Length: 206
Image (cartoon, rainbow, N blue to C red; front, top):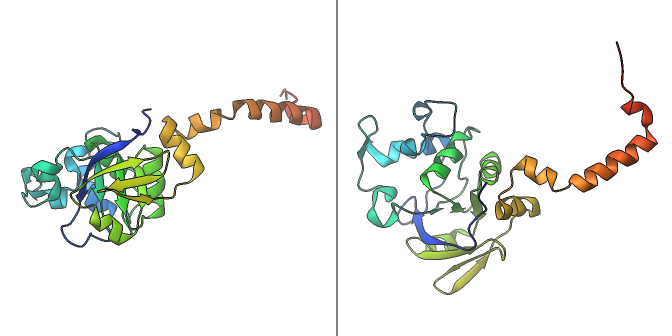
């Protein structure tokens, strides 16, 4: 897997003009009717379909929606309000965002399951004070994962992230890869346990 860019620099696309939108649920991110396969591919076209298209079936774009505006079409960074990713636990929402090219989401808060899905799919979810997030709308920002900072117009804000989540993003590790970084410790523990409880490792024959 690819590691998170260091740093990530791009324009911050607000999902609403003015006050950031709260409670963006997974059915708005990727409606169930847009999930036409069980795989991860082919979902980007349906991303935010209820808002992105005036006619979703005909794929007629709504020119007022942020991702249809020229300055935001190639955006890698989304801005939103509180409780982003609420609703169902569908991982397709994160798959659609990742396939579209979103690499970071800045919001006042996140639904917990959605937050975890972001980490597992190498999107950085950043919880940030609402006023600070709103000040970044439409601005170029720099995200430094190693330093855990965002910089916009000379102002730097620090964000929190769990140590394991940070390592997964920084090194491009999935959950299995992360476990295998402890391969030596696992091997040592198994050898010790075989000595302490040899009966557990006996082969059984029927």
